Image 1 (cartoon, rainbow, N blue to C red):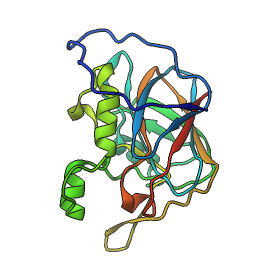
Image 2: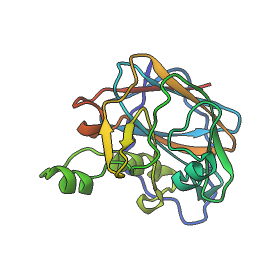
Image 3: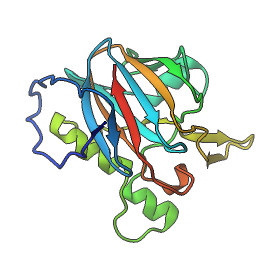
Image 4: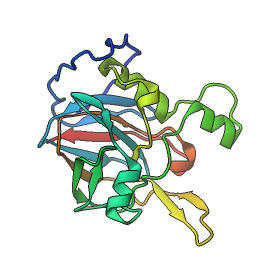
Length: 218
């Protein structure tokens, strides 16, 4: 197993610069707890995201590799699916209504596409946290920076394994993930993509603990 080392901040390419597609990582990769990584996923390749220990969320964001204004869209995906929980047979759409991913396998069936990636500000506002706290937003924009993706480009993520429920009054609750050790989801890329993926940093999403996330490009 290879360790997906979190990327350090990098100088951003000039606006409009072509993005050079590099080879995808080979073999099973591990994202350490409270960190993230970025990689290229080519059209037709499959991204398998695995919860190796159970009850750990992973945030996924993506843009079209040669057209970064084409971005993963929670709103479009939920609108076209007509439901909150996307699973096998469903698609994840871009903001321009093109299909980015098709879900081919899913052993959990509960993923959140409603809440934005945890951020420093979220920990301060919701949890009254003082000082720095690792976050999915920071890990995503740090990892995606080398591809020219800026923080303001990152929207709502597909929160893999996250367990969000909504009661009849519309109140949102984040519960313990349903995923158990070895559970996974497989997404097929329908275009060349730049992907960011994390092992979520929010205590409230991961039953109070932090664990790694594994992934493999097939």
